[in-house]
Picture 1 (cartoon, rainbow, N blue to C red):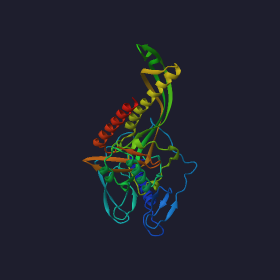
Picture 2: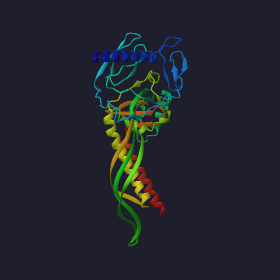
Picture 3: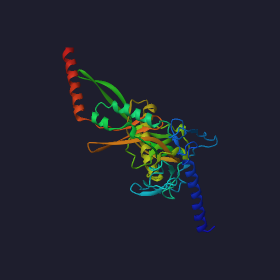
Picture 4: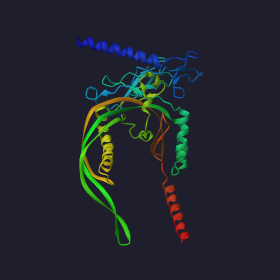
Length: 371
């Protein structure tokens, strides 16, 4: 087959997929004609205007989220799309909007129509699975308010400025990696003993060199695949329940923002290896203590081989919000599955100082009256 024929056929297939996706995600309500969206509360389709609801079918028993061999992947590069924009014309009303090219799903600001945008580049991978939203917007706002209320060092003015209803539902891109690891290690096993020094006893540790091989299977090492949202607080809102993963369907992103990955597969695996090595260091130290019946482990050095590396590209649900306070932007994330809140709230130095002073007064009073 000629290259021109292959390209033409590929373009036709992509056009059919785009049309099918738009048909699914931009469905109209049979009662009032408004665009329906995905509803986390019912895990179905909802019309926000008239209340029409429709359940989504459960995934077929034969459908599953496949682990993909890393070495056979041919699309591993990262993408720097953060400054690029694209113009989208709404097929429903004709309105034209400008979006960040990282966004794959959006809502028309003129008529409320939803759409899933075509891939920003033919080298971009498609998601293999999605964790659907389970926490609705009102519940996310309530959980955030409760979390913020518990920040005793956060200024009252900042708490008033943070709006619980300002959250936006976003599907963030994640890589997960599996691998069998084999680590050759050396280190020291430490044995504590109590020794008297004058009127007191101190702990001394006797060390002996140890070495060996440690193996561990790493399952679903998470890596945030978004450069712009890596520090948004999403890691503090983990973990996610991957037992509820379902094969990707465009219905799940209707009415939500879905971000494409900017951290590519190769860069994601590099980041994953660093995270895995941190896990392995803790595991090897525990292994030394157990194997040599030691009190502690130290001076651990190791090198690791990674075998049978597989990956998944997933979309993970979070509610995101931010606000400015005294010239600084604070971002907050609510886990769209569990409701766990992550983020960093403003801290009042005056409140911290007052708490320290109060603590010193209490300690001083206790010591005075205990004598």
